[in-house]
Length: 114
Length: 112
Image (cartoon, chains in turn red, cyan):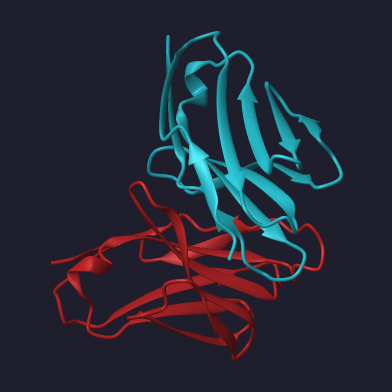
């Protein structure tokens, strides 16, 4: 059963606190992504990971960092969270996109920074 | 870089009517095109993926048209029903990189 799992599903943090969002996939996909979704803006790419310890900034990386120490696991870290980082965060994975590969999405994490 | 504009942002139709959502993109090297459906509070599910070589693609109750000359991708729900009420997103990728660029989404409401 192909699955992308995100934890936690809901999170409330205070401004300045550190935040860790976790993502796992069971498909041995090389490439993983973190997106955030805000009303009217669609999905914006934060980071891409091509494989273990091979990460690249997306379109809006400021205020975020990532960690990928195992192929099946990709973490998004907010050091000192800000209120404008309140959003829904989606993790996705795909096979190495040499072909027409599809993105598989997790269920999302709804983060509120107060 | 690639930019994708999706229209309309909101769409309300009656059950049985058709609904058309359109995306225009800027990169002529775009080759892979995707439509995703997102129900309220849920994740994105793939509706259809199409490739630059195919202009008309048919699914269950919908058609996807690709006009490469005008750089336009459209999703046409032929006879909408309430279960189609959701947000729809197009996504575009070229052959040269790993980035999928998404449209801002269309919130579709089908009224019974």
